[in-house]
Image: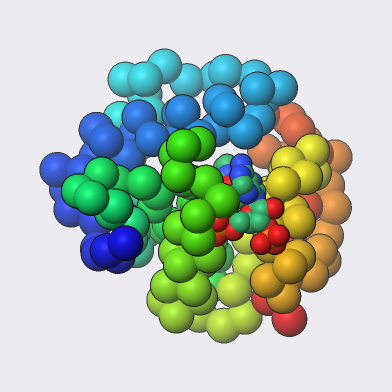
Length: 145
Ligand SMILES: CC(C)(COP(=O)(O)OP(=O)(O)OC[C@H]1O[C@@H](n2cnc3c(N)ncnc32)[C@H](O)[C@@H]1OP(=O)(O)O)[C@@H](O)C(=O)NCCC(=O)NCCS
């Protein structure tokens, strides 16, 4: 596995990866955006404003992580590459990039991700009813202990 900084030209690959990872892990989320909107978001918000690292396996981008300040904004792995240590490696890189202590939001129903973070030293510090997020889905704020 090779970790490297994301480049502008990764935007289409990362936008597709993001959509596949979200739809597979969280099929219960409302689908609020088109693939074209995902690409716009990746090109104009995520890549320019966040510190983004990708994990490559045999030349394929298997996952990415993005940090802004003390916040892990994105951590998404392609379904076929999950459970192989890619998420753990990107999380470690994100912790090195973020202002400590790193925080992150995840949806309360995303039990696999919550277990992943809890096993890696994150503690739930705030639960919401989802009124403030785009999906209106209850979420939880984790902080690295
Ligand atoms: C959660 C996620 C980032 C973990 O990355 P990963 O590469 O699968 O994780 P690793 O291989 O490094 O570690 C495996 C761990 O993840 C857990 N896990 C979560 N989802 C998994 C999946 N689909 N397949 C296998 N393991 C998964 C395992 O239980 C294991 O936990 P443990 O080591 O604490 O027992 C990744 O599964 C993913 O992208 N999920 C979908 C998108 C998502 O929910 N992102 C987080 C949004 S906040």
